[in-house]
Image 1 (cartoon, rainbow, N blue to C red):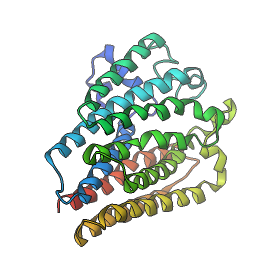
Image 2 (image 1 turned 120 degrees about the horizontal axis):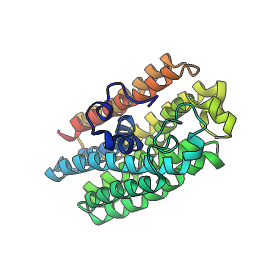
Image 3 (image 1 turned 135 degrees about the vertical axis):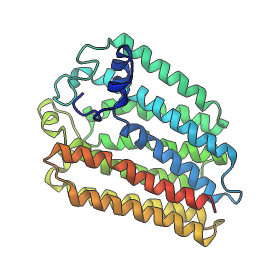
Image 4 (image 1 turned 90 degrees about the vertical axis):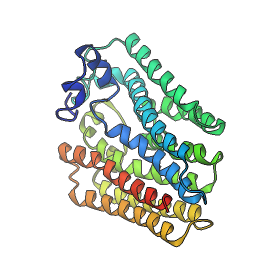
Length: 310
């Protein structure tokens, strides 16, 4: 596919019969799994850093379980997205080769595949506490709405942010058993980050989107996109720092707080680096910078892990 990772494992190693289904799940493009997973890791690591007992053995399962769940639910979400968008995808150069519009997979086959992925993910969710299970079920609401958002709002990236950052709430709750202010603020920071990276992503399709009437923040902002991206960057870093302060000041030591805040600072500088290289008229640059947000989010997760280990 046109935007798949070169020499990805699906095209190289997967049996031929499974490839259309794995492509439907975007397994050949792992960046989406990372972007869904990283807020989960932020949530559990911030919760552990705020806990006087620190990281527990069960936190390791939360980290692994979220990784498995992110892969599966990202796959199920992408399958649902492609079922909903199959007619629109056929009209866009970058997406017309996807399995559904190209006829590699039937709608019935896609529905069954979506159900299998969601069911396995649900079994993983059942290993968490009751509050986290309830949150995991509620997460299906923004996932269900997102494919249709670009039809009725210029801000579909907000709905993506609501879905993709839910893991910050869920993973915090999986550790603590309840929500508080800190994970909610962290969730809002993640939504602003999603507006940043997905606006960059949306610039790849703005010409095709304009022709078929699809709305996006890239089309809405136009030549003012860089100004808006700076705003989203600043908001995401500020909210992340506030979440860290709210979570850690009551219990954590100065070193843990310093490390965690350094992660927010480094997270922001990575986005500054992206903006300095951004060319919204070059889709290859947009794709490369979009994918680089794995590193931006991972930097923050590593600093939080260091803070939690103290």
